Length: 327
Image 1: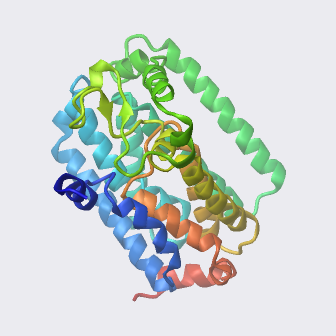
Image 2 (image 1 turned 30 degrees about the vertical axis):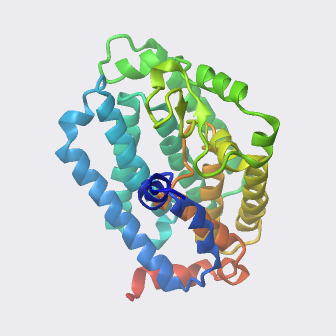
């Protein structure tokens, strides 16, 4: 409990102490007005992301600039990703909100490809796919249509990858082509496995836990040769709180997701289920357990999963409330 620890606990933007208090959001009662304010906040952040991207476009388009990539990741994780929640609940919003959300996610996907940020490509791409599936479900299509849509999605994805491999002269895809097969995780993970002991796997090393790091990333902490985390997020959770922490997260999140998918009457709950699923599958390609609205939305979604009253609200009532009535 020294000065450095307290400072990081209170003011570290991503890995400070507030990330550990985020699950408490499920304990608060949330009337429909809460979600209306939440949607407005998400749209405001998306608009701010577009504005900042325009202002700093010259920096962001410098694919060889490490600061540009870091700046872009901060923009996306703090401001852009939550816009996916608007697309997933599109039937609750007017065209203006949906347009801002679509532009925010679309810009994110394009810049992720250009800057070769594979984790962000995965998250933004999955968000579009999940939003489309929710659209199909809202239209009450038959199960065969849903299966056909899924097969077509994978087909187009495969064709896209083949076409991507055949693009030789495109400046836009140049950086992504360089990194598409690059392995930047194995070395870091090998250091992780070599440094962790049995006790560390069980209970973790705590909030300030460090892990051994290769020489090229020394200096990230006050302890040379160590770093505060790892990009593979499920391993990062184990580093801080062990398998116990990861297991508790899964035991809480998965039943909530099942409730949202199979025991709900509205798009808000279905979107919550897809948002939890998106977070779960993003634990490998990116760091998504940090104090951002993206992560707060995960626990808001879990709260929806455990709220029978919220899940049983008819979709037409919510749609009428969000679109027709103001606060």
